[in-house]
Every structure is written in structure tokens, then in C-alpha cells.
Image 1 (tube, one colour):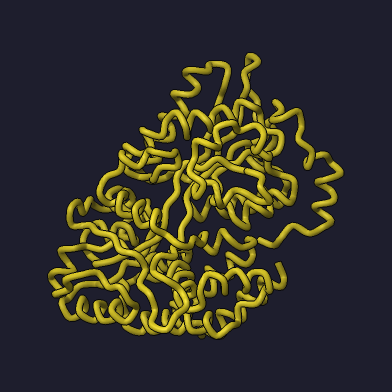
Image 2 (cartoon, rainbow, N blue to C red):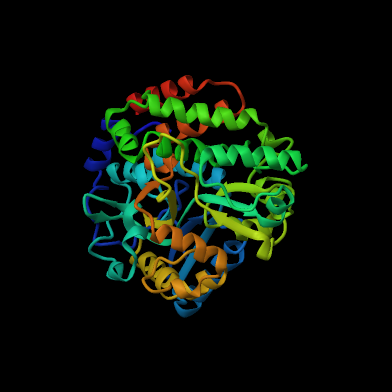
Length: 429
């Protein structure tokens, strides 16, 4: 998806979409197919989310029903889409200038583009509960001190591992360095264990490897400088790709990984949950999706942060992460914001009890299980934070990161070609 051109921004400004219209007016839209309407004078709004797996698949409708039961004058028209399908559909409606009233967002460059186009409501002065939320949970949704979404989950990406399979391979502790990780891959293969599960078909899981290696080799400041200069061809980024190529050369992934989805039957999460792979690099939601797609590893499941790289500028306490939030389209009804406050602040305990999310409300950490506590503790000790690259950068750049890294993993691009392609996308964004 290309960046919004100036001519489109000018049109949106002239049409009044950049002006706060009666602070969340009663006008509604369903994301491009005409206004949402409800009979008998009821207020209706459209809600797009990505809750296609548990626990959200069951929990989100329960929370929506609870809200409408308490507010019988409100109708919520829900659309739940798988991650990639959601991104594609949202990109299409963003281009048309017709976002849903309430929509899933990861913040960063994608949200920033929608904000710059005048399509998103500024919540800074109307969301009165921001002080109840942790600063890190709001970080991805704030630009120039203004807030454009309400988070419901925040966390980080790290390696989830099967302790039983590690023990079978004689691995007594998780690897702390990239060299140790590669050595452990060899040990697992020798023991007849598939080292890593990967959803090669969906691309975004693979981008975690290149993103983390760029952080560990080049460092967080280099990523910031590259984004500002629109140039990712530096030696550190090429080395990141070389290290990923080194891992791929060991053939660590499950058979057929290039055609595997993430949460689909036989995909990455199922392979991990069913004990058919020793590791997966994934976010805080991994245990719940493993259980939903495969089985619950229980006490056999552990977590460790992405290793350091010898000679690299990054530290193990610098994390790649993000969470989920909901933004409102410009002009969404005020009842949509009431729903977000209900969803996040009045139901934080239900979100945490589902074992699929990490807290965004201050002081809620005590409700976590052992695995999510490990993630939360690692995040709490973090000395640096990088949003997922496919969300941190403008859409065209994030998509090129995903595409080029997927090509590298598949053997279709060299590390140098990856950095050149990302740079070209950045200059054209």
C-alpha cells in the first residue's frame, strides 16, 4: 500500500475530515460500503477486529454483547478477519477514505498514515482514562503528543521453547547468543527434533528474525537513522540478513514451512503446540494460539529473549514488540469511545483471565500466569523498545520488509538485495 499522496491529503482536508466534527459525532461508516444504520433510532457502529482465534474469538463477542445489553440503544456490527486478510481489507478502505468506526491497529507508521490523511479521531482530549494505562502500552499510538488509539494488549516477541525437546537434545539452558542458538539448532537436529516452527506463507512471522538481527547487529539508533534517511543499505543491515541466511542454511524449519500459515491447521502455532518443533519466535499471544491450533504444552513451555550477536551494537534487553489497540475513524459516534473504555478499562480482568493478553492497565500484572509473567518481566526490564517493523514504518516499507525477508528465507534474495529493496520502498513511500 503506497503512502497517501499530497493531493489526497488536500482533498481530505477540504472535505472537512481533518476537523474534529462535534467531538465524535453521530455519523457512522462501515469501512467503505455506506453508512451503518439501525432501526428505531438506535446508534450503530462498525467494529473490525482480528479475533479469529481463541481467546478473542469467544471473548470479544461476549464483551460486545455485555456492552449492548447495558446500552440497548446501541448496535455493534462486528467484522472479524484473520491478520493478513484484515491488513489487506483495511489498506483498501484506507485508500478509499472510508475506515470502519472502530478498527484494530498496531499503531506506528500505518496508523500515522491514516492520521495524516485525516481519517482517524484524535482521542487526546476525549479519552479521559489515559492516565490509568501504562506509558509503554500507549507509545505506538501517540504522535507529537497526541493519542489516536486505545490499547488493550502490549508485549514483546521472543522465543517460546519446548523444555522437554530441549532436554532430549541435551540443551540445559536457553541460548544467550546467536552462536549458541545456531549450535542448539544443530543439537536438536541431531536428536531428531525439528528446531523451529515458521509460518513462511504469511511473511510477518519471518520478519521478526531480520528485525531482531538488525537490532542486535546495527542497534536501535541505526534503525531510527535508517528510517529517517530512507536508507537501509548499511553494513549492519546486510550483516543481519547474512546471519538469517546462516540460520536458514541449517534447515531448521518444519517440512513445508514455506506454505505454512500461522494459526491454520498444521501451521506454525499447531506445530509448536503439538510438540513437533522445539521453538517459535512469536509474541505474547503465542501460548493461547498454540493451544487453540494444536495443544497446550503447559509446564513444558518456556520463554527466552532473542539472543545477542557477538560484536553487535544491540543488547539483549532491547526488545521488538507491540500489542493491539483500537482506533476510531474521524466522525465515529461518541458511543464507540464509550465501548472502548468499557472494553479495555472495565474488562481488563477478563482480558487477562483469558490468558491471551498482557495488561495495559497499571497494577494489573499480578493476574498473569507464569508464561505471560515471563514476558511481562522481560518487557519491564527492557532498555529499548522497537515496534514491529511492518507497523513502525509506512505501509509500503513495512510490506517490503515482510516480502524481502520472506524472499531471503526462501533463497530468492541475497542480504544485499533485501536492504536495497527496503531502501527503494522507503524512498518511494
